Image (spheres, protein in one colour):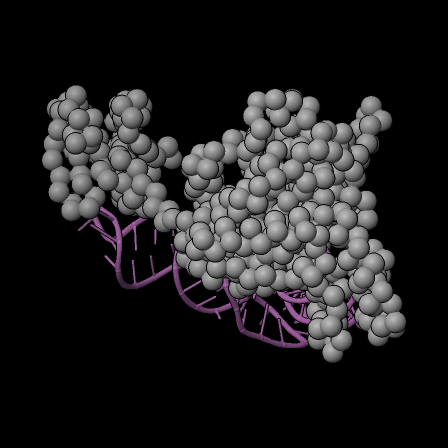
Length: 417
RNA sequence: GCGGUCGUGGUGAAGUGGUUAACACACUGGAUUGUGGCUCCAGCAUGCGUGGGUUCGAUCCCCACCGAUCGCCCCA
């Protein structure tokens, strides 16, 4: 249908653009304070970037990407997330040469072919940050804190921060086998989804909603019991930093991220009232990604937040700014001569930095006054033949209905004051 | 990708197998001379997501498609 945007896309209309500008401004202010710099990467990349970066076998890569062949025969993909692109840009532009720790943020459209529902669109917007080049768990804490500060700074309450460690490749693969050993003889008892998870992503069996209350689940090995010395102390240090910063969090040993690149720290911030799509922000450490993409071994952490979900949450708690539009002056013209004069006055007002509106439909005075009222005009400037003859205009204060006659060249001053 | 619910004007919505599709808000115009916000009056869907089918006749029944929504999945 010609008059319908593609499924899963949405127009951001004039009456909500203000909300977007508002949160984008909060984001930029916050990032500035934390020392994160904005980066803008292409909306599409070589398909391989995401296959390698996010990982084949993940849902995002296997069934959610917008991939197509361009006219030059290249396979390209609309970015489903921004971390892989940021890392690519970091390597390509040798940003690592500028500092040991490079801190970036981005705001932009991402694309995932998924079944749309509230809080889940095919084109959606994310804000995210990436801190590249440092393994200190304090950076993990900084990243998490920035996420929390953003959400709390916007006034959100009732957020739930969950953290976990998914280990490094060594301890995770050990854990994987332990889990598979544990579930192997219970496989028949698990739901269909979990049977397919067994090979693909056994960690996910743990947070399956259907199987999670099975009696033996409590006995399943926990990743945090299997972490190697380094991963384990990293996780402990993170928890200490968070505690010291006074942030409430919950250790959820079942928290797993769906993108392959995560190592050690994984976290998620939920706003439960959002229902099925309640994860407002999520992220973690990805110490292996940069190497995987051909760079030197470079530890990194980041997170992303879904702006549509954020907006939903803010709306839910009534935290969006009021949109009280108003104009400084509405110029009411009566008759043709007056209209020419009024048009010029409107332009002069605008040149003077004021907002001014006028009727172009030749409507009655009453109708024009109604418009002035509807537009929330501070003043109505009335111009008729009488006024023009006197070289003056009537200026009516819409709030208190007081009215005075002012000479043409004093109109702008009067409205400014 | 799977399952459930839903789809009436700009918005919120009522409604019925059969002549004029309630109501409210919004919008537009008017209520004697050039003045808004209150009140009153009038106008505003040949159309009930789209396309088929059943029927003498369908907005109301059936099917498909599209879309929204909820849950699953996934994730932000």
